[in-house]
Amino acid sequence: MKRTIVFFLKYFLFWFFYFLIFKLIFMLANLGSTAALGWKDLIGVFLHGSRMDFSVAGYFTMLPGVLLALTSFVKRNLIEKIIRWYTLLLLIAVTALGMLDIGLFPAWGCRLNGQILPCFENPGGMLACVTWWQVLLIIVLEVGLVWGFYLLFRRLLRDKSKRSVFASWITTPLMLLLSGALILPIRSGVGTSPLNYSTVYFSENLYANQCAFNYFWTFCYALTQKSKNTNPVHYMDQKACEKEMAGLDQLSNISAPTYIHSKNGKPVNVILVILESFSNRLIEPLGGLPGITPRLNGFCKEGITFSSFYSPGNRSDKGLSSLIASYPALIKPSSIMSAPDKMKKLDDMPMYFSKHGYEMSFFYAGDANFYNQKMLMIQAGMKKIVTQTDFPIGIATLQNWGVPDQYLYDRMYQDLSQSKQPFFSIVYNISSHEPFDIPATFNRFSRNSRRNKYLNAVAYSDSCLGHFIDRLKKSPMWDNTLVVITADHTSIEPGPVAISELENYHIPMFWIGGAVDTTMVVNNICMQTDLSPTLVQQMGWKFKPSYFAKNIFGPKQYALFFHNEGWGFVSQKMACHTDLGSGKVQYYYGANTEKKDSLLQFARGFTQYLHEDFLKK
Image (cartoon, rainbow, N blue to C red; front, top):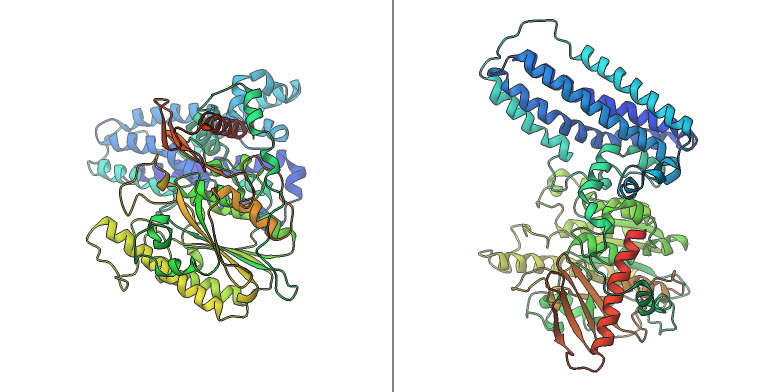
C-alpha cells in the first residue's frame, strides 16, 4: 500500500515539475520580453501560475489513481505498464502542444486559446508563422523533450522490487479517496469559484500574466468554449447589417446636458455601487413591492433616477462587461470576460479616470477571481483591489460567498476617508447573492421560503448601503462626490418571471451626491453599456466611439438584452423578444406600430453585428 501511495504522489509531482520546466522554456524562448520583467513579476509568474499547473497535474493523475485502486485485483506490473504507455502518449501530445504554443506566441501574441483554435482549420496559416528551420527545431525539441521526460518519469517512479503482487484490499478505497481529493488542485481550492484565468492573473503587465498561464489548460478551456466561434444569428447580408449600424458610433459624444458639477473647481469623486441581483420590482417608486428597500426608495427623490435602465444579460459577468467595458452580453453561456485576449481590446470606463489622475480602487466582498473580475479590474487600471481575502477570516467566511455588506461598506468608507482625492471607486456587494445567508441578526422578513430569504437579503443590502450613504453625507467628501447606484442583473425573485420577459432585465440606476445639481426622473430607454459614455461626457471628456454604447441623454433611445435561447429589444414605440429555436417574435407592445418592421430590422442588425464583432476581436 505504501508503494502505491508514494507512486501516486510522485506521479502528481512529476507533471507539476513538467509544466514548471515548460514555463521556463517558454520564458527563455521569449527572452526579450522576459528580461523586461521585474523580480516581482518573475516570482509572480511561478507563484500564481502554479495553481493552473497543479490543476492540470491533477487531471493527468486522476486516471492513474483509479488504475492504482485496482491493484487489489490486478497485478501491479500490469497496472504500471498501462500507466507507462498512458504517460508516454500524454507526453507526446502535450509536448507537441507546448512546442506549438512557443512557436506561435511571437506572431500571435497569446497562448493556446480561443484565438488559436480557428487557425487549426487553416494549418497553412500557422506554418506561415514559422520558418523551415524553426519547424525542424520544433521536431528535434519534441523528440528530445519527450524522451528526456519519459526517462525522468521511469527513473523517478522506478520500483526496485520486481515482484508482481496484489496490493492489500485497503488500497482500493484509499486510492479512490486520494483520486477524489484531486478535485482540490483541479479546482484550485474549496472556494465557490473554480479555477479560471483570473485566478492566476496578478500583474498589470500582460506578458507576465501570459507566462503564468498553463498552455494546456488554456487550450482545453478554448475547446470547451468552441461554440463561441460561430455567430448564432444571421438575418441579413453584411452590407445591410452595416447600414443598420451606420451612425451609432457617433451617439456616445453627442451634445447633451450636464448635471454633474464640481465644487470649488475641484474634480468630482465618483463611486460606482454595483448591487448583486437587484431589479425595479423591489423599488416601490419604480413600480416594485412596497417596504422592501426603503433607502433606495428615498434615493428616488434625492438626485437623478433612471426609470428605464436595462441590463443586456442575466449573469454577473455579463453585467460587469456591460457596465465597466461597455460591451453587451451575448447569446452564449458566458461573456467576453471569459476571453482575456478579447477583453484587452475593450475601452474600460475606469481608464478614463485613471488617465486624469484619479485614485483607483475596487472593493468586492467575494472572490475576485470569479468571472475573471480581477483581470478586468487590473486591465481597467484599478490600483487597489480589496476582496474577501483582505478581511479577517472570521468576517470573510460569515457568508457562503464572502463578506457581509456591512463590513464591506465599512472597509470602503475607511479607505476612501484616507484616500487622496479625486478618486474613482467601485464597490460590488455580495449579500444579496443566493443562498441569501446574511447575518442572523437581521430578520425583517421570515426565512421560511426562498422568496422571503431573498427579500430579507435585499432589505439587508439596502440598509447597509443606506448606512454607508449616511456616513458619506456627514463627511467632507459628499459635497464633491457623485454616487452611481445600479445592479449587475436581476433575479427571478421575488416572483416568477421568464428569462425572456422585460422585467427580467429591468434594473435600477440612481445618481446621488453633492455633485448632482438636480432632482429628476429620466425615462429615456437605455442599458448598462450606455453608462460609460454618459458618465465620461458628464466629466467633460471625450469617449472613444462605440457602436454598442450611447449617451443616455441623447435623442436615440433603445436597449437590448441577450440570453442563451434568444434576445430582446426595447424602444419607445415597440418591445419584443425573439426565440432562436423557433424564430418566433413575441411583442410586448407596439405590435401594430407602423415602425415595427424598421425597428425589428434595426434590432436584428445590432444583434448580428455584435456577435460578428465578438468573433473578430
